[in-house]
Image: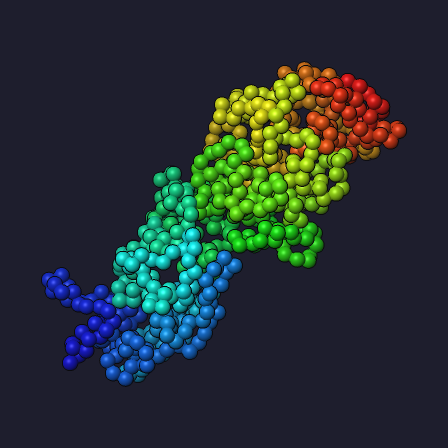
Length: 622
């Protein structure tokens, strides 16, 4: 009779014994973690019961509903998963959901041996044994399902979310809902022999996740197909992996996400945002140590100093936070995903102003002040914070310990207004500008110092970066690591504007004058060395053109003899005056007649009225 009952329950549960007795006469549940028989090899098991099915099913006196259910059902409801990016409606589990049956054990409120027809079955772990809160199998161990992949809901379909194919092992229920049993087969532990978590199929390279989640760009991304197999293996050796798989490629989505009990509930992220990135980008997995840029450099984007509040669904205008020195409103944030989309990022390079592969798939703000779901140009990513947003750097950020960016010149035009910090307006509304958002289309007669190619740190031309009057440049041509491979030096150090020991996160030197006691008076100035102006020399031949006075007849006098810095007269972004002339008011003052003015009459000629380095100029021509 017991054998007949056993077979009947197997059939009811959807498990037929293997037909070929030479292969096996036992169903897959035996000796799995769901086998609570006294003779089971599972650690958690009963004291005396020898029936594997009785803990869930019974042919008589079952709980009302399907599956001849024999286990007491939980009456508890816990908060469920929610996220700003979730398009579906997720509610508490309903009585008709098959997931309700799973939760009769897995919410930790009902003893594993508490059956309807067979009473309380004692366990080796003790009478009334429930899954402890510390158990990974207790989904409500923290009194919530908010940090578990949602279940018992109808998925909202979209470009990146699809229903499983009819032939797939992943199945929705008859109501079109995703249930626990969509991903888990409670009767077979080893369909994925590596994880052994009762998955319905192997999840190697996240094939289970990708059944429904088809992230645009994922298949060709560097996180899906790491270019360096040594780094791929090093991931498991240094970080381990909760899946049991080896390498980033084989872990796939679960390199960064966990479907159950991650540290960050929204989007099921394994750790706080930057720490997820740092698990590989701290030099232990990838050879490029990004974390060290944030920890060791004097000037950096404040990723480690602002809350991890990046939200993929945030409205573009949500960046309009109050000034960081006030306590009202949302906190200012700078996070890895403000600039990088890990699902799309690639190793592809590009030409200015287009985004590189590392910046693909990130929101942006155009030069015309509209918002894009995916930035086309690099500067559009920068403008999100350094444009109209009140989240951009403000006067108190400059020189502030920990987040300071270095001294900020007090420019003649827009000095003291918010526009002084609005880089989008600087580049788009000024009459002269570096060609970031658009080309200048100047003749070489107007810019005789312009090199034919951008040069590396050694002064050698970079053949892939030609320069002409119609060229454009990147923000990161100036704002970048001061030790990275972007310099063209040997090594594999990280590039990008993560951090630099040079003010304003500059790639190379562009030394500012220390303000004198009184603007216009004598100060210490800057002793001329080419390294002090290496950033300018990257595109402009300082030694053989600028100091040869080919564009301005008194460059050498001002820079070498009077020790004026390039930035004393020129704004590296833009100016309302010609040739980027936008005097630093902390060094330059109006002349004795109260006039501060630069006038350009023709290429290489014009006049100045000002007081600088103790010299008073009135319509001083050149």
